[in-house]
Each structure stands twice: as C-alpha cells, then as structure tokens.
Length: 303
Image (cartoon, rainbow, N blue to C red):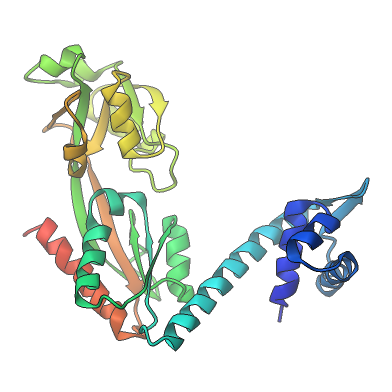
C-alpha cells in the first residue's frame, strides 16, 4: 500500500521543483526528504524527476503520477474529514457535488436550506466538479449526492439518477440592439448576428459545437464572438451591448434593465439537471437530503 506521507512529500517537491524549498515548506530536513523521494522512486521502479542544475523536473511519468497523487490525497482528506464528523456525532454530514447551474437555478441552495431547517447540526460540504468527477466520487463514496448536467448511463451498475430541473432558455438582447424593439423574431433576424456563449466550462450548456448545430437546425448561423465562463458573465456582456445570447429562464431576475429577454417558440433549448446517487444507501441522512432535492424538483417542475 502506498505511503500517503511519501505522496505528500512528492507533491511538495514537484510543486517547488527544489528539495530545499520543499523541505522548508514541510518543516523537515532536506536529507530525510531526499531519502523519502528516492525510496518512493525505488518502490515504484519509476523515475519521477530529472535532476538538472540543482533543480528537479518532473518526467512524463512523473507528471502523470502527480495528477493521480493529488487526487488520492484529496480523497484521503475527505475521508479524514468524514471520520472526524462521524466522531462528532454529526451523522457523517453530507458531501455534495454540483455543476454551476445547480446554484444559478436555485436547486442546490433550496435543498440545503430545507435540510438545514430540519437538521441544523448537519455539516455540509459542497464541491464544484465535472459530471465525470462526481460520478467517480459517488462510486468511491467521497460524495453522497451529485447534481449534474447529464445523467449516468441507464445500465450503470452502481448509480441511479432522477431529473430535477428543466430550465427553458430565453434570448437575451441588449436594449439598444435593433432586434430589441421587434415584436416577432425569425431565424433570418438572428443570422450572422454576434453571439456570446458559455463555452469554456466542462459542464457548459452552450458548448460551441452543440450550439452551432442547434442554430443550424433552427435555420440561422451565429457569429460566435465571445465566450464567457458562466451565465451571469454572459448577461453582463449582453448588457454591455456586445452580442446576443441564450440564457436560462431561472436567471431572468438577474438580467437588469439593459437586457431584453424574449421567448422563441421555434428555438428554445432547455437546460437540464439531474440528481444522481449510489444505489446502496449507507446512512439515513443521505436519503433525507435526496428526498429534499426531489421534493424541490417537483415544486419547480409541476406535472
């Protein structure tokens, strides 16, 4: 079994690229640290570093090992945190993964508010992660529930999921734009217009290729001039007159007076959100929180 202390030493040396600086950071002597790194390489049968001009440089294998080591140490920290919460009698608390839209649409804040009102002593830890990371967290039990923009496969052996949100998108137009005053908009009106998308996030609703394909299906070609990191930034850019955008209807109250929001019957994609969890419940508090999330979903999406 791998020594976590050696992994921590390895990560520190890799980040400092110098044994001396890493030793100072770790509050140990340089010689024991060098021995630990050498023992780790010997144990693995792998050269993690190249040594040049009194500096250490990660090898290609070392870079791969660094990524995995960081992940293992992060999981170990979460496991330690879980154990401490269990020791304090907090029912283990809750570790919740989410994508950005779970916050913007109010699903996660509403569910957390509900569980805190019912059980105020529960410790809740939130982790902004990609769907893939969240699914792995559920399988490894470092997460209790995941809020994701795509569900796991129907035949997944470990995970279950339920949809919790369908959030229709609206066209956001700067108030000074000529289209803002037009009552009926057609695909021709949107052709070759400047557009802003949220294309840089792994969980982005408007990924560039998907967005272009949807526009082509609707009968127009956009000019993608800007990409922002989140929907609120998109609204800010629209407000500044820099282009059109599709934004979630749940963000309508954040648009402000310099943005006009319009429904397009012929072009109205939805942002979807799912709750996912492990098939085997180990602690009652997880079931309680899941019921809170699903109840909130029914309120937001009545039949």
